[in-house]
Length: 103
Image (tube, rainbow, N blue to C red; front, side, top):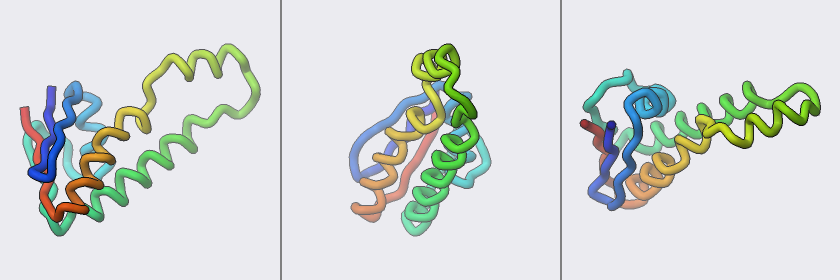
């Protein structure tokens, strides 16, 4: 379990594999501990939003397969996993604070 925190408030916890994928989405090397410096928070937020967009585009179904659509509704995709961290990054950007993560 990896916990993301910021002095601007809030905490987000994720399983390691999911946390590593959002850390990569922010443009950082996946690690159990790390930080996004205050000056780098807006860029990390932009990159994570881009990663979410790319993930959505890659997983868009080509046809109207009802079974595939039902299966997708039951899965937790990258965008849903990234949403709480995006909110934390937004608060950190507004408060001009870093974002830290660690076990």
